[in-house]
Picture 1 (tube, one colour):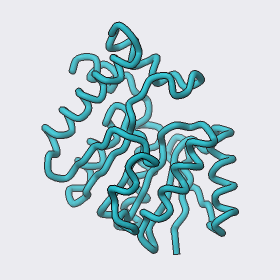
Picture 2 (cartoon, helix red, strand yellow; picture 1 turned 90 degrees about the horizontal axis):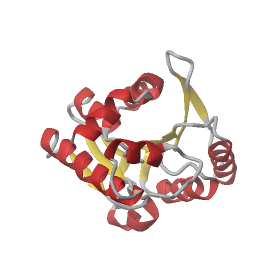
Picture 3 (tube, helix red, strand yellow; picture 1 turned 60 degrees about the vertical axis):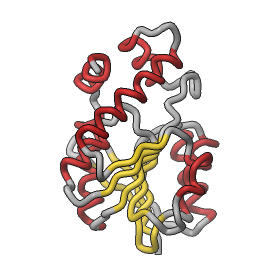
Picture 4 (tube, helix red, strand yellow; picture 1 turned 30 degrees about the horizontal axis):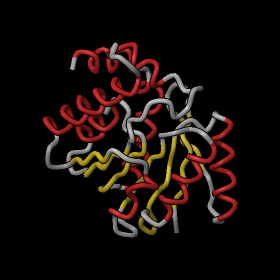
Length: 200
């Protein structure tokens, strides 16, 4: 758990976008939330602490080598110092699930998979809010968006981070155009923004 603690302490994400997601959850009164991209589990525990009635589902394959341009796996490997990057990701998964299960055993569920691999586990229109922050490559984002659409309730919200990444913006814009959805943005205190779309 020491490596996970080190990664969480040095993580900049809480100051970048957590307040934006908090505001969206309050505005929409979301109770059942899916996060695609669990990473360090820091956002999961933040949401579970901040919203005592919230039920959290997290999906992440914890897989090394998925995107050579994303430094996340390298950071994990530097902290865990295992034989290879995949073993480091395996140990990250173990530590994250242990931490979340210890602190929030009733209101949380982590699935080690991509949404494409496990979307059939959930009923249609199950989630109030889906936050997409996993694999940031175009095809992966597009798949997550397409798989999420059937899982969000009417009047629910699809949202995500890193719209300033070219592939993310392209996938979101094309998806919105294909499904006649309006994309809005919510700005954080530091100027960072996340995208979201309320489904009718």
